[in-house]
Length: 177
Image: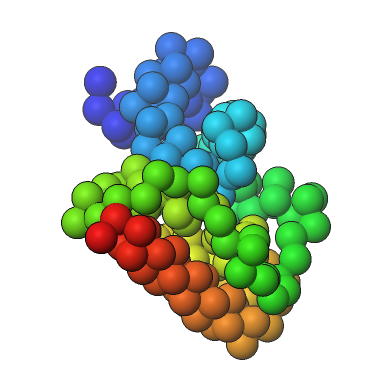
């Protein structure tokens, strides 16, 4: 069954097509959710809520551009809405809050999972802006609109997130040497 046929089936509310579509994209979208969530349970909630919205609004997909990109945007927006309920703060963070709980070892051994752990250990504001800008590719103006903050706040949060990540990686490197 092609992607186009799956989408048409989901528009008709065909449960088999919905299941297949979920199975096709759930893994990739869970990875997206894990970047915004504090833990896997919260990520699963984001994923579930995101797919509820995908199936609710699938008839609005215009078959222009990437369907996966369309789903990703819904999942990211859903994750942000759920995080906004938690009242995310965008403030200064002291060094004592920058602990990762990761085992120290050489930088060359830093893998994708390890980097994800470092990113997930960032304070909420830093992590969200970092993910939206660096991973998802949104501009600071777009991020500002999505999070109801100033573009300058988005830029400063990104600078601080990058600095914190650099410091954490340097600390891991020093300890491993």
